[in-house]
Amino acid sequence: MEDNKKYIIQFVFILVGLIYCLKLFQIQFLDDTYGPAAEDNILRKIRDYSYRGIIYDRNGKLLVHNDPVFDLMVIPKEASVEDTTQFCEALKITKEEFEEKMKEAAEYDIFQPSVFMKMLSIEDFGRFQDFLVDYPGFYPQVRSLRGYKHNGLANALGYVGEISRRMLERDTTGSYKQRDYIGISGIELEYEKELKGHNGVKYKMVNVRGVEKGAFKNGRRDTLSVPGLNLKATIDLELQQYGEWLMEGMAGAVVAIEPATGEVLSIISAPSYSPKQLSGRHFGENFSVLTQDSLKPLFNRAIMSVYPPGSTFKPLQSLIGLQEGVISPREQIYCSGALVGDHAPPGYYDVFKAVQKSSNNYFYIVFKRIINREISENTFVDSRLGLEVWDEYLHKFGLGQPLGIDIPNEKGGQIPSANLYNRIYGKDRWKWSTINSISIGQGEILISPLQMANYSAAIANRGYYYTPHVIKEIGNTGKPREEYQIKHNVGIDTIHFSTVIDAMEAVVEAGTGFRAAVPGIAVCGKTGTSQNPHGEDHSVFIAFAPKDNPKIAISVYVQNAGQGARAAASIAGLMMERYLTGETKKVYIEDYVKKGHFIY
Image 1 (cartoon, rainbow, N blue to C red):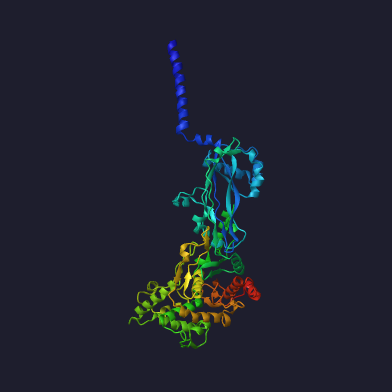
Image 2: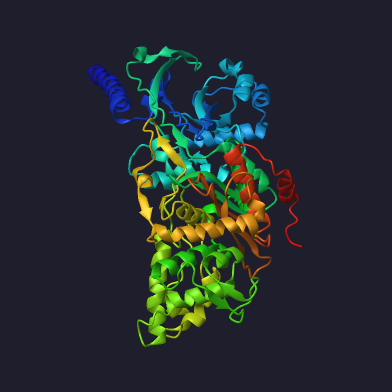
């Protein structure tokens, strides 16, 4: 009996020992729950976030930089806050907010760090830092946010935000993780690959109170972060800010291009917002306000809105007519005024006079000659064939299709095609008289302000353009992307431009574009009034200057501002003067623009 008891006791001890051994084996080799918790008592893995590339304007002025901020991290299993009142006062949060944040952290993972509070500024963190040693389980992680010393260029620059779960799922590179920042729109999105850099990792030794005791193994396991590439923009910040100031209180767009290179000097969408609104802790609430704003400040009108070009289209009609040989520079065409309403009086018109006086009837006749080529005996077929020729010229000018600017979400607009009219009227059931409104830039033709500025640049260059772009140097390359170094010919012989350009000069010197004149500089332009069925017409103007060796080409659209000779021509003239001379001598025109009394 005694022997049996002895064996039973031995068996119990052996069984308990086996149970302990199995449990230890499970903890050490099978269960990964305790490993991170134990390791985090002595070792903390901290992501070393890279700095995004900085963006400068063409003159070296800062457009976008990085501001350091702090994320306050928490490990719930280690967290201890004895004085919640002091804790909450230091962070300027309520006790309810504290409890909610701790609950969220615990639900995420009690052993792993998560964000307790995002984007503390240097000032906010400095106020809390003195108390940090009293709160085990909490530690700071340095991040950076985009910073701006100006309030302009928001629609083009775009903004950066925390990567979404959907974006993470679509990421095939594996270079992003939860909580990383990523370009959401504008240049920040288009050049994300160049700007983002590469994150690193640091391992820190910490004690049980979470206080850092130095690098683990002298940093041998650390990997350094690599900053993103800096970008040099084509934008002239001073010109941009001046144009945005002129456009205050208006809706519309301004685009200015350097014709010789395609570099965008200014790209304005009005109304807009400050880029500072979408950077920092208040991103969410500011974004909500902006998206609900009926004026749509997040909508980039310069590349996304499309309008009928109105009479600014007439120089192009002249060039097509000259190239196709249906008119000659000095040919006199009598315009009785019977075809369409006109502000130009009846009389004889050649190309020069028709552009300068903006004769609607003249361009109705020119367009009819382009469309009705008498290639076919069937009038409807003949019109279709003529329209296809006309369409081809417009596409060569980059109209009715995305030009490919390095800002996302560019819209192409619309150049009416035979297919479009077949859908509207039926196949072979339309002809010149059905579609003649497009001869003066109305009807179904829709063009963006960017396309209009590029069209102006192509005329300034006497027959070619470079794709407009807003970044001229990536890193230390000294060059933009390769596609922005390709010359595009528009299919019009150089000889045909002189008459049209002379007429555009006369528009400014002695015509409707007089408000765009720049003292001492030959300016070539064309006014336009874009018909608007929903209210007052839009004011439109295109121009370039100087006439020879042009440095700037510009388009201006001001919604519901009436004639192009008023708001649009005035703004274009002021911006050209500021860019070419560095000052504003026509203060009376500036006052006229700021008063905004364009409809009378």
